[in-house]
Amino acid sequence: MLELFRSNKFVANIFLLLYVIAVRVTAFIFPVEWEPGHLGILSEWVYSNIGTNGLLPLICSIILVFIQAFLINKLVADYRLNTEINLFPGVFYVLIVSALPEFLNLSPILMANTFYIIGLQVLFNTYKTAQGGGKIFSAGLWFGIGSLFCFSAWILLIVGLVALSILRSFKLRERFMLILGFLVPYYGLWVYHFFFDRVNYFYNYHFLENLDFLDFAGAADIDLYIKLGFFGLLIVLVLLSYGIYMSKKNIKPQKYISILYWGLLMTIVTFFFQSGIKVEHLMIVSVPLAIFLGLNFTQFQKRTAEFFHLAIFVGVIILQLKPLWINSLT
Image 1 (cartoon, rainbow, N blue to C red):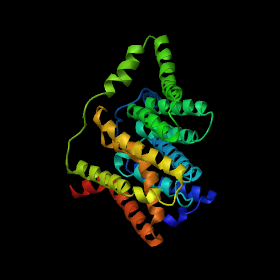
Image 2: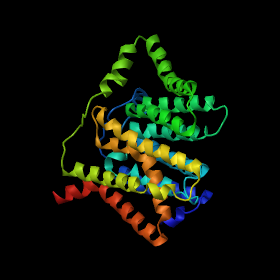
Image 3: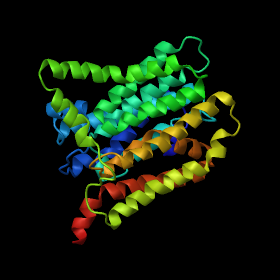
Image 4: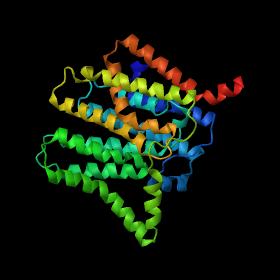
């Protein structure tokens, strides 16, 4: 199956869309009631218009995951992060953001990931450009919008500042431009809420209700530890593969890979400050994690890659069907 995505042709993207549907179709067959955690002010607006459960949010999630997978593949191809051009990073993004039943909904983190990917694309394009101020501001703007969908995405501002240090020589003005771009969407929403005399609501809903230290929702049981262990193993695999990602690449893609590493490590910090953390919060590492796994599987021999991909695919489907087989056992 994985060989279908070992190219960048148009037909492969059609297969990618079918793949997204196949991986997430269980949400339609076995729907479950779900309530999002750590809402941003913009994700709350989305839910007020389309709801959190039902057919429309699930269809939107499929469309969004496909677009994000497409954008990730474009990012990897445009900046030569992989040794060959294929759709593996997008495929593994689909698997990661569909790995657990809690991931199949239209979550705030899923919405924020769109702006994370676009912001990275813009920021990467500032390398060795004489006048990059406009792009830096634009990257901050995308990151700021993303953080209004999911509060934890505020960490993207720190990722952006680190990325500037890697890509460009230090210029205080450029740091201010990134921060200004990040704050512009906040200012726009503040003006909107000020006009309707709802500034306190904006402040309390988006900031105060989302800040807490090591605040985890739900019980800590064996099921949770298995899920954390699975993602922990993937992150360890990526950290140990640093030499593989850097080998046979010139300085430009090496800088981009370093930024993705920082992005992976920085997003882990949000587990310490976000309130009401649920299992779906694990999706916050999905963008860099998927790109790195795509690079790993490119290096595998074809048979090995097919075997492990099939094992992961089957494992994801089994996890998604967990409510069904647990009910049958009880």
